[in-house]
Image (spheres, rainbow, N blue to C red):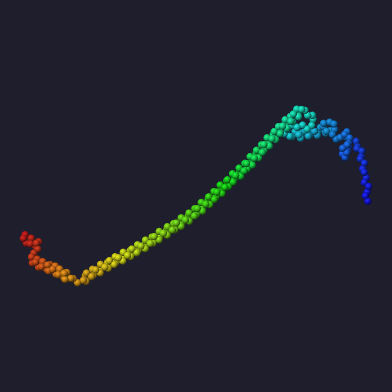
Length: 225
């Protein structure tokens, strides 16, 4: 069962009250008063002016405005607009500059890091090269040393062999000479040798017999004196 809705009749506005539900209210009951101060106390406006005075520009918030005030405000507006334009361009330029500067610093850091890394890599290469050269030099000296030792050993062996050969040759030669001398000593004389030996012997005997009884030339000289 649906209850009957009661229709509310509009209330009569009280004195000085604005009916918000109906825009057709009485204009004489408006909140905005006829004077330019909106009905606010002077102390409130003074506080508002003190707050406005804190800004970097002179701005009136109450009182009467003159044409000079409006012209000054227009000039300030144009100046501010120029400043906005200039600051916009200035900000954009410095934004580009700062971004480029950041990129420059990044690239400088990148170059510095690359240089440092390259220096480390070069040091690593030099270390490896030094170690490799030292190992190769050690191997080279070992090879040369072993080669010289082998050559010296061969030369010593050759000297020993030549010494043995020379000793054997000398020994063989001496043996041959001794053998030849022995053979000459033990060999019987030939008829020619015997005849020659006999002739020499006979010649010596005859000579000795010839001079056996005669004094020598020294004795003869003594006898004569």
